[in-house]
Length: 114
Image 1 (tube, rainbow, N blue to C red):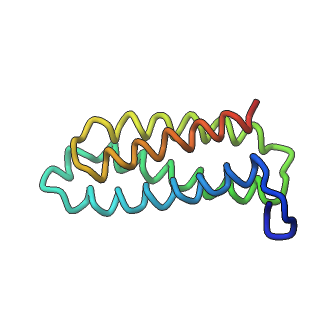
Image 2 (cartoon, helix red, strand yellow):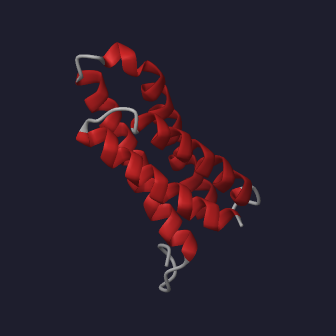
Image 3 (cartoon, rainbow, N blue to C red):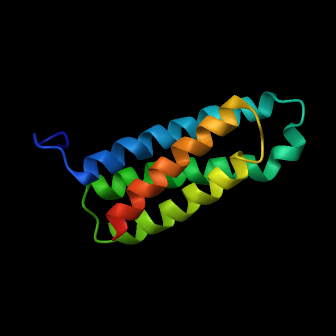
């Protein structure tokens, strides 16, 4: 659908999930920093930052129909999957929900990359 058109597309779905994923990662990161074992989560926190940033970057690439969108979609999918794997190591509800959202985003990105 986009902002300037009226019919939804796979790209719109991917953009929506990337925004949702970036937000989930930022929220999870903030929650992880409040956990008593925050030091044990350093690598996960770094991955959350990477995931949030690549998702927001991909939104920009897709919105302007960059010629590198497919490549970025694949990279984003890979980072989302890695982030999900790190989050799944922690049993907190915020980490488990973030992992689920990351996997949904990865799937949408993979669909756009193909």
